[in-house]
Image (tube, rainbow, N blue to C red; front, side, top):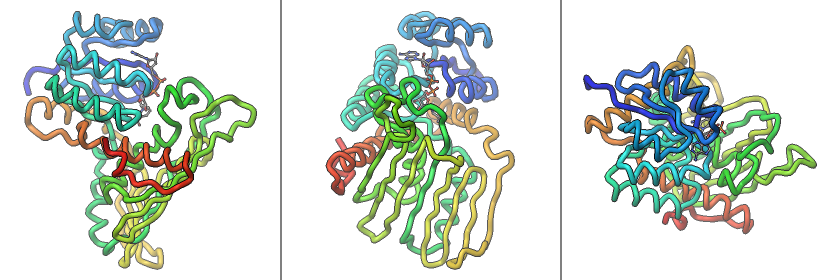
Length: 333
Ligand SMILES: NC(=O)c1ccc[n+]([C@@H]2O[C@H](COP(=O)([O-])OP(=O)(O)OC[C@H]3O[C@@H](n4cnc5c(N)ncnc54)[C@H](O)[C@@H]3O)[C@@H](O)[C@H]2O)c1
């Protein structure tokens, strides 16, 4: 890959500034050619910081800067219009999670990408982190799993702030947002559950007006007999990210930067640590996408792989609304 691919970043908030803009500076196969944000001050600031043209209208960017691909890091409600504009221009997309906010939108966007002939890769950066890959190998040591427990929590001081506080804009709350990563790990390691029973709340800031859940608890079960739960919260500290899978020969515990295999009594059998915990996943993801575009490797995280995530989320929200158990497979569009 001798010629750098031309990349543009759309949506210049926290995620673009923390991961994608530095990732483009560090990666091997792409270079930044333009940035876009509907907020003109943000567009101007990042254009100046990276010495590239800045735009407030994506269609103008696509026309004038002619990128090979766009990295889309916009609020969840704006994802559809960004993908539609890129598809119309034949420009590939690296899409920040979630792929879509509901199964109907996921199916529509998957069909659009296929008919436009563009690649779309959803960013789930744990798949580019060796600790999470090592966990897959350790999982083979514990026998048939019978229990799974996930916890992803941190304390955000204002759960009502911005688009994240409103379910209509965010598509959901913490379950759809940060929970997407834990759900992706669950599918990667264990597959799509057969049943979910979920409840959520938006009560961490009493008297404050917001309706996107700050806390969610999802019980899940597989026909194999495996069951467990995921607890997600953007209001309850301390910051914790952990998935534990237990079988007859012990448990695999995967956390940020470390994985452990414990015996059935909880004593350590072996562990693996990465230091620093998160050095280069953003650049690795971008380089992987460039290899996908060059036909050198299959897309690891394309639209069809993410229909299940939309179905799981829809099943969880339907379970909350009806106080009944729901089967995610029935929500696959
Ligand atoms: N992978 C991760 O670990 C991770 C972490 C944080 C956020 N994210 C994801 O990244 C995305 C963005 O999150 P964020 O925290 O950066 O949000 P943010 O609110 O900080 O930034 C979003 C930016 O998009 C701009 N914007 C809104 N509509 C737009 C449009 N139509 N065109 C161009 N720009 C537009 C806003 O002005 C804002 O600057 C979300 O999908 C979120 O889930 C992923």
